[in-house]
Length: 105
Image (cartoon, rainbow, N blue to C red; front, side, top):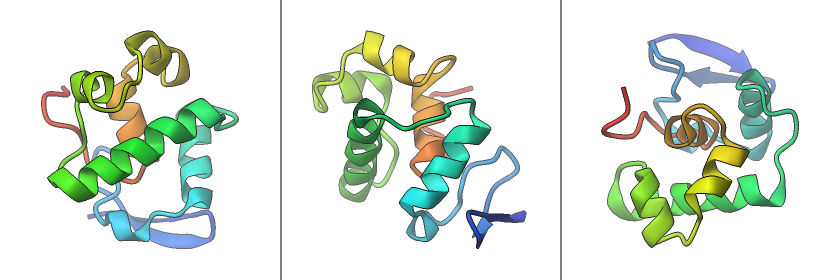
């Protein structure tokens, strides 16, 4: 399990770049991870998704799928792809400090 320093903190990651301990996550880490994913600024829309998936994770024990973000979170698929291009569930989970969502390749 690789350890990296990000936003001035040593953080545990898996081999695919997902954090392995969601309790290490901070908003500063999210901003740094977003930049690594090509998102220069986290907008209100980004934070809506991040906060939803972190709260849903606490409730369900796994990152939500896009379908769950749509149905339960009320977040439109188009918005997810606008805010987190090229794999919104995977990219959003990574920035939110969670593991890879089930069903993502």
